[in-house]
Amino acid sequence: MDRAFLADDPYLAADGRLEANMVGARGCPYDCSFCGAAVSANPDITIRTRTPENIIGEMVDLQTHCGVTAFRFVDDLFLGYERFIRPCMATFTAARIGDRFVWDATGRINILHRTSDDMLQTLKLNGCREVALGIESGSERVWCSPASSPLTGITTWSTPHPACLPDRHHGRL
Image (cartoon, rainbow, N blue to C red; front, side):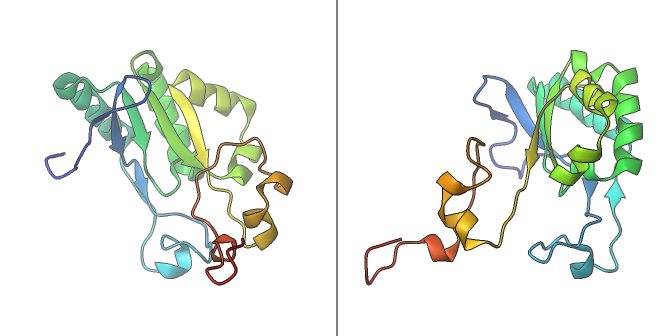
């Protein structure tokens, strides 16, 4: 893949590793009303996956030519498509990816909840160091009251809900 048009990729990550963004699969099987990748927003598009061998080939190429040893899968839902992740992890295991690279991916809490301990261990052994979870809420109470939120103590990055922005006329939240 020609990365000439990808600004700042690969990039130096906070841990000192050279890191690159990757895509292993496109599309999502879920139908979240707020998401542009939702099944209902894309009825004619199925989930498209790369072969595990192709993904590994890009990892090795980036290591060889750029010194990259860390990857961030920026898929809509890398860990959410079981028919993809199981063969991918089997191929990663056979290629000993966890001995050479670390990687991060996206997931959903309901998927991690039903994922077996064996699969979680397989992810870790294959270099997975982080799973980013999207925890969305339409509740103003959750958005505006982090102290009473069920997310207290979890590192989060989010866009403020409009109801939580300062009121220009009254200078209050």
